[in-house]
Amino acid sequence: MEVPVSAQEYVEQGNTLLWQGQLREAATAFAHAAQSDPNLIGAHLGLAQTSLAMGSYGMVHMACRRVQELEPSGPNASLAQALVFLLDRRYDRALEAVERTIAADPGRAYALALRSYLLRQMNREYEAALAEAKSERLAGPTDFKVLFPKVTPPTQPTPINTAREEREPERSEPVWQPPSQVQRRVVRARFATRGVPIVTLTLIGINVLVYLACVVLSQNLTEPYSPDNPIYYYGVEAGIFITQNHEYWRLLTAMFLHENWLHIGVNMLSLYFIGPFAENVYGRWRFLLIYLATGVFGGILVLLLAAPNVATLGASGAIFGVFGALGIFFWEKRYALGPGMLTQWLFWLILNLVFTFQIANISVSGHIGGLSMGLLLGLLLMPDFWRPVQTRLKRGQTGEAVIYILKPLLLVLVVCAGLIFLAIYLGGGR
Image (cartoon, rainbow, N blue to C red; front, side):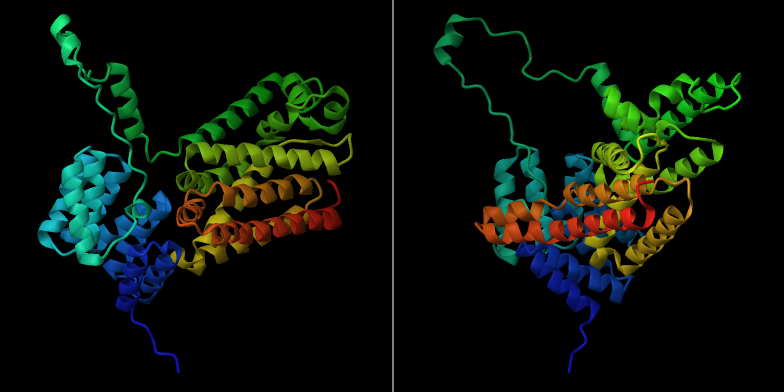
């Protein structure tokens, strides 16, 4: 007979596993606690702490926001605020917040460990060692490198040469110089736009501008996308131009061309809905890499499977790639997010695949190619995918590290191969 486990017991189990460095297991325990009692603050705070250790910073923000909603003030709210300040690298503000937590709850080992980490980031090594020792006395020894991001090494001071100082006058330059006005503006701009999906909005803007340019250039043409339109002629993907003239840039430029207002409207609306979330999960540069790489791979699959005289264009392959990367994220975080997100993703995936195979003028190989590469890159570029591997390698568990990589990688490769064969069988090379 299975004994039911309460939400609080799951939280205690998750805290123990987190302190032992078993991050995935701790995340599972906290997720079960959150599902059992959605208003349990310890469950969401545990998810934030585990997500920080695994490098899933988007999850940290969401979990901390939930903690602050449930407890607007108090030690848990202060600890959640400290984690948010840590992600913003505002270590002084994070230290103030975590010290408020310690003042209200002196026996909280994680808060002391976080204080030690923040002190090390601020080069206050002696105080950090004291806080770390006190934390270990309360909860036992642990590898603090597993719990928090890598500590930025302090700069080593230049050795003082006393004899040289006697011979040479003291330099008038200060050792530290304040940042310039340009550097301050850059920092302020980054802080002001930290929650803005800049890459998504930029991609949408580029697509719209290219489409408007095509419309302007085609005013005197009977067909807007005839060969007389230079943007279309030099940008569209056609196998005959790529194979015979080696115009490989078409694999990239075709992603920013659209046939009509309905085509670009549907694509940009889809990108607007899924892009910001994917950009928040993967970060701006990884998101941009996923978008461009999946779009190009979809074009390569079209080049290999479609007829040489078939012209293809549109951002659908890249958007399918972003959608695939989100699916892998939902699958990897299914215990933390619950099954609802993954179920919704599967529903929309099936619906889009049905449209892809049923509508004649849709590039099946382009959509499937983008989706397949998105699944693969979404796994390899996931922020916390490699952290458990590094932890196992540091512990000398090479075999477990290899298995940890191969199991999801082989599964994704099998799914990608199955999708490509399905595209060939049902949709041919169009």
